[in-house]
Picture 1 (spheres, each protein chain N blue to C red):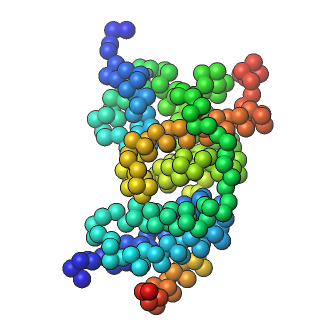
Picture 2: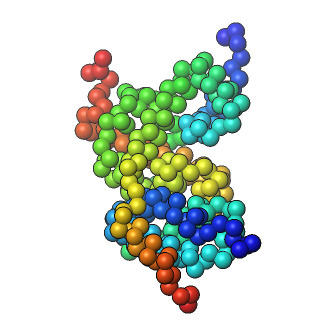
Picture 3: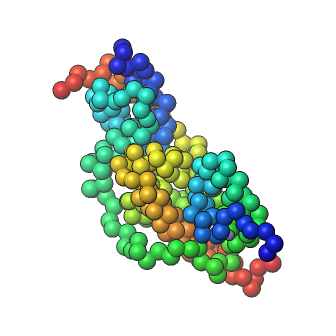
Length: 183
Length: 84
Ligand SMILES: [Zn+2]
């Protein structure tokens, strides 16, 4: 009672929606996401005595979910993406005909999730936690057991890759029109 | 150029992501805003990053834990499996 002033239910249940969404993004499959979340809760229950009251339950749960994902799912699927992270430009392309990114809002979910799925894993998980779920850098760092600086640089490069993919798609499908035709 | 911007473009670029996320402390957010007010280039980049982030965040906003899974977890917690 003294060591655990909060209950397992109180700490864990509020995060199930987030865990499910992250699981869904990681596995790309609703049924697999359900299994992943259930296994995560089970693992968390077994590890509950090691949870320090007052520490961050959300990051703790994401760590468990991610480890579970790596151990069971990651080795099955996902071929290498062929993207060379070193080849990513530092700045958005200045020749962009839509420099304020209005085209992003016109892309459908499927397009965005496909591009997200194509990201190398290291970048993908940081973008999912940080951009999609809005976790602060420090919490992403804690969940993934990497330094905050690494979170920032992976996020930066992951975003650049995604932006490039989405922009190419938008140009190919005519969502972005060449400059001459605009106005 | 009569006035000196609080931050130069390099500094603003470094903090842009945190600014777009709403993670910058108030004072720094103010300095960023005053840079963006003066610098069309950074303001444009900020709008681009904001549009991108808004689009990403919109993917799963309505997705929540399915009721069936919630029920399974409640059952699980009501009678937890014995520790091995
Ligand atoms: Zn600037």
